Amino acid sequence: QQQIEWRVRPSLVPPLVIALDSPIPFTIARSVSATLFKLPTRDLPNVRLYFQIMPDNSPDSKRAYPDWQDLERNLKMMASTVYQGEVLYFGVSQGGRTSDGTPGLLVIVSNWDKNADVWLQIFTEADAPNLSFTLVTYQMGDAFDTWKWWFGGI
Image (cartoon, rainbow, N blue to C red; front, side, top):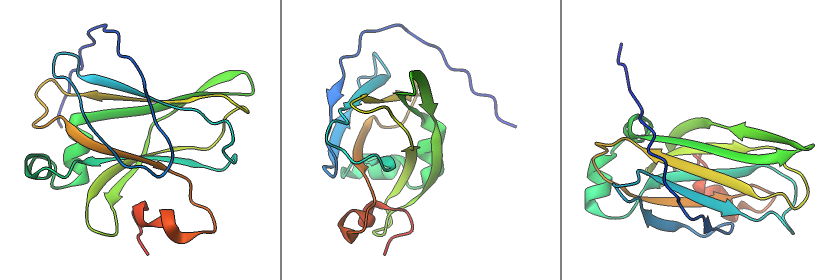
């Protein structure tokens, strides 16, 4: 059995505003080991939101995270929002691979109040082998264009 110790170093991490269906490459500063994303929900249909993190396209990132379990060992992800006046937290729902074989972790947010922002927090291990990732946020509807990100693929 493996024991992992997490240390928290308080830091001000400005949020990056994100939109649906746009993969965002980003790098987490090793000195902070955290990043914060904000998704405004105004004008979004109230159907599940999917936040998926994957290695970025660099060879170093792909080598550092060949499987979703490698991401899981080195990252913690959590989304939060307000629903019926209460703060809700959503952890990692599953790990898997996209239709092109890219490993990833997925957080699913199922409820939020109208116009409440959804926040995604990502924390890394101090000795994480690489700090460059890609995040994509999507909703799966009747159109199959966003299903390419889903771990089941099409």
